[in-house]
Length: 125
Image (cartoon, rainbow, N blue to C red; front, side, top):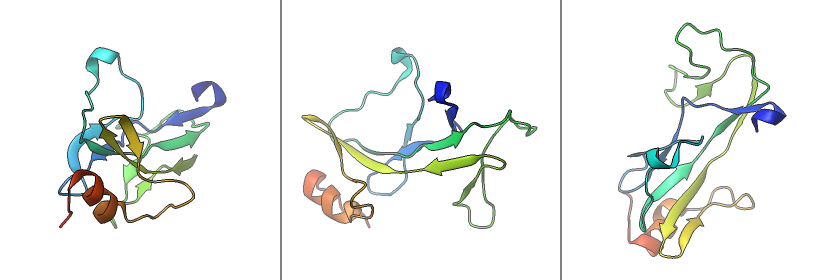
């Protein structure tokens, strides 16, 4: 991606999903040495939701962060002065390996209460 002038915004990560929609597992969207990663075992459910930047300029913020959370809604991520895109997928680890619960042709399935309940017996409250 870097060779093609894209960069992943490292300040924001994916997360675990369980009884709450945001759980403590932090899913980085960039590589770490294998010994520093997290072992994903059967039953773990998480999101992959990178923010990709196109040809970002050198960061000039004093805190070194490219993106920030909009204080008006505490949800929207702002990345000034650069084109960016974000997507999100929900993934579960099964005995056969990872299974992606969300797909581009069906961007808003009811994964939280249907797929999670049927696959792992989890019901969000």
